[in-house]
Length: 229
Length: 229
DNA sequence: ATTACTAGTGTACGAGTAG
DNA sequence: TCTACTCGTACACTAGTAA
Image: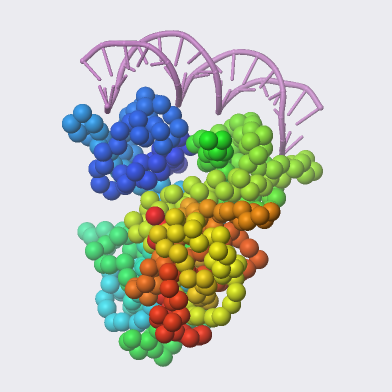
């Protein structure tokens, strides 16, 4: 049980969140320790110390810039804030589901590739209780609300389908969410970690060929409910 | 400047959030101090003390139940967590706008009443830069995603239109958000604090009669973009 | 099992100040 | 200005324990 906890205390989390509000999320931003202190309700000195400690913990990067300081969150730092956000979001929205609506299109996303590999069949079965049809139903999402919803899937833990090794090549774990298609067919939504593949696509898998089962063709609308819990 | 701050420290916020995750949001939930302590990464004793302090601060209510304890957040406690959530959400979603789509209907919501009062004309002008046409465009929102979006407006600060006094009667402040209707007309969305009026309605105001300007009638679709910042 | 008191301790703070 | 050191203090913790 030598598992790294990646859990931070109250002070760390709130400091990270405040940094995020100051736009220090993915790129360096000039953050003066007194401004940060004001935002946190502590002195400049305390804010400075917190930044140093967060850096030691690997949660932020600091860079001296002129007389001032530039700061940005690291991957771990972002992960912590996103996990916190996800938990809070789940708690505030009693409903633990996201409803998606989009139009079918034929494409071959990363998910489609994974699901076509025989090595993933067993892991998928163990995680979801079904062996996916080798192909995904691709939905094109439209509208900022849908896109944001799609992005928000990245913040949730979901169900992890474990990876495997095939000879020399290693295939990593895949994250997905249990889902229901058109209120009828059980399945899952694949949430591949930020790829170049843009966020307007939802890849859906199921134990059967959804396209046939639903009698849908390209351009038709389709709704999917993803369960976060 | 006797303004109540309603700001809590790191430890308070994270404790409230953890309680929320344990479903102690609006109704009493049995929360043992050791479970809460585990969730927070502190001892049972520290968790117990935190609850007592939060109660003193008016952020939670405690009730002894059998050998255990039941806890729920108060209005102030909820407000703090929601404000925190709103800030975090705003920071994580670079986009600071919400797109709504709904269908027109004729109704007379609370917002329609306010906007018809002459006393609000000046406050509206000061806050938004225009004097609203005396009447609202009512949109009926459909779908859980839209409803959730509508609810999420409650979490954001928005623009406050100050209240006024007319003889004996006092009219309170009104919260709204700058918005754009059909990508063409500037206006605002009214976010009346949780009324009996249900959350599937979006009330839109503008300097002109939107219904005429857009040439829309009941049942027609209409899209509105609300700006959170 | 609970909650929550008391005692003792360490950590995170504000203040002062140097670079 | 800025960051970040040291110092002294106070608060929030853990541990022990009663009810």
